[in-house]
Image 1 (tube, helix red, strand yellow):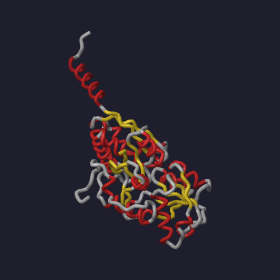
Image 2: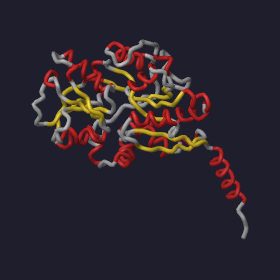
Image 3: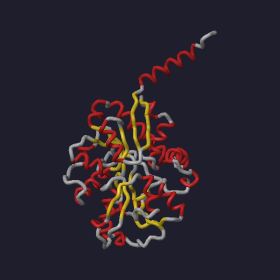
Image 4: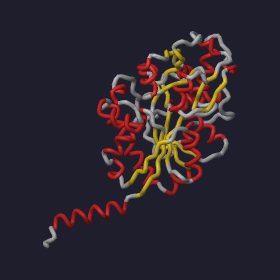
Length: 314
């Protein structure tokens, strides 16, 4: 048997590349914003940057952050407010890259209620129950302020921690009254005809701000700068593709979230941030301080790793 020299070289090179790739353990929530990293995996953008990404889905941002802090994961996705709170308590989480951006003109996060609910206006939420990822996350805090600004009592709104995938069913069953729902669950809600939109409480924070981000511990970043840099490069390229090829990312999101791709094609899609300005983080940070989510005020730059892709004005 004659060994083909070209095949031998290719196989050897492939084996060496595989051996040199660093494994990065990553956790994310199965929402539409996951298309950023799903495409990066599909297109082997991690391999291009010397990494092997082991991606797992989890339903709770709080659980994912706990996994990163405990060392069972390296990088996790989550909303900003828990990161703010962690930093304020001396916990070493740092933002390494943006995920989804909230833009009121392309809103992908709506507060919904059951179609037959008696809740018709913000003030009708007084004393009601809102489902959220954590007890005081961005959706809860913004809804309380939104309620106050529209003649209600935000402090009377009660929050219950539920995984993202459980919130829609909980509203339908009457266990909670409302929740801020994102794609693909938002699409399912609207297509079902059993829910209706109440408003956009995230506008209480700002018309535009960073909604979710990738985080790692300061220790991991310091010890693995090349891996973090490679991860950021991969998801940034993945985000660019996802924003410009919405149709091509439907099937991968549907499979990851366990949903019908035909329904997702008809719905609102998340906007992925491939770079951010400092104001995109500072605005929600200032909001969190003003309304008691955190008890210290500080410059958003202290929470950013050196690898966050910033705009020239950011």
